Length: 105
Image 1 (spheres, rainbow, N blue to C red):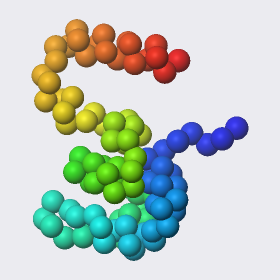
Image 2 (image 1 turned 90 degrees about the horizontal axis):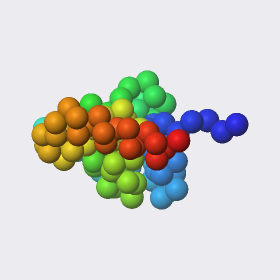
Image 3 (image 1 turned 180 degrees about the horizontal axis):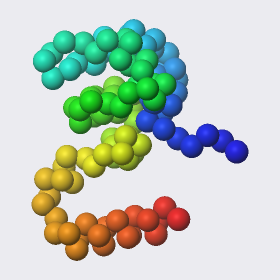
Image 4 (image 1 turned 90 degrees about the vertical axis):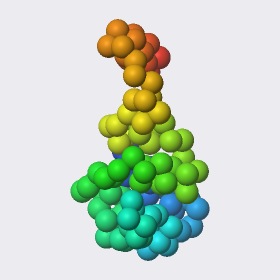
């Protein structure tokens, strides 16, 4: 049985697929303060020792690596900011989650 997908594993596989080192990818990623992400931080994310600290980082990783942003938010255990901004009612969220669960089963 294959290992379940994870955020870190998905990042590592995509990075390797495009032929970029951890150091190279880290240099492409900017923190909120404009500084580059450290290669050690990226290594920790890839090995599931840390989680991405911001939505901005999840979005950057998905864009740079050509991954689906919504799927990466899912793997990170987070909700995309554009969905949160919709200000849905509790009933609408519950219905959407029920539909999602049914589709995934």
